[in-house]
Length: 338
Image (cartoon, rainbow, N blue to C red; front, side):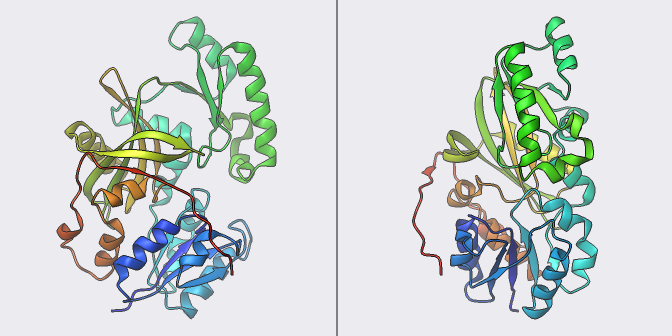
């Protein structure tokens, strides 16, 4: 059966386009959609389609036309800001014949809103950094010695580490907080932050430990498949730049607890810090993250697994050969834009 997969907000995720093309083995098309015809991922796709902004009133209609015209089997979003939109219109889009591989509104809401992420992680009895939305609460916490500088200051509804700052004193905190609010009004995150702009900046304790990235994989019904871990060796522009694969039961335990309680669909990218042998969970991103290539190259072929599931096949064991101790590094390359 031919399978045509549409990647929306394709951006710079060339590696994902190519992983799926390799897994497809000519059995269908990999189609990339983006609002910019110079998005690098558009070059590697079998077909590239220009679409309006995700906030354009005609965006969903544009996707429907693509689904019908190109017999799309499934849609995969690669952008945090688009996930709430696709989730909201999931039934509407699926009525045209394509499966939208996106989690429920509730899951997207928990993951997209960092205050709700904090509350959720606490509710499932995992460790997470203390999180605040007002400077007054931070001052009270510091006075009571339940919190100390330095602090991480970032947008509550954010993506790809946009706008992260650090504060080492009350003076810095006041300045950074105000600057964040000013920048937020001018940024792509402004639309997402309008819901509660006065509480759109969060302040979080800065953890001093070793950072790990987790790919927590569920099937399309929200059932747990496995957790694939990498130790981050270096970061660049908010994404993992160098990492080494890890297999450790303590991460598997965390991954399964998150999976069983969140019930997300497909891949979920998650950040965990290890501080004095305690695991702290920070971010939940229910999509393919920038760290996925490290998991893929270490032996978990989620691209091929998705295709098997779309074909109705349940045996995915041949695509899970994850090994520990494999180190990889990203690099840039030039691409000619047609």
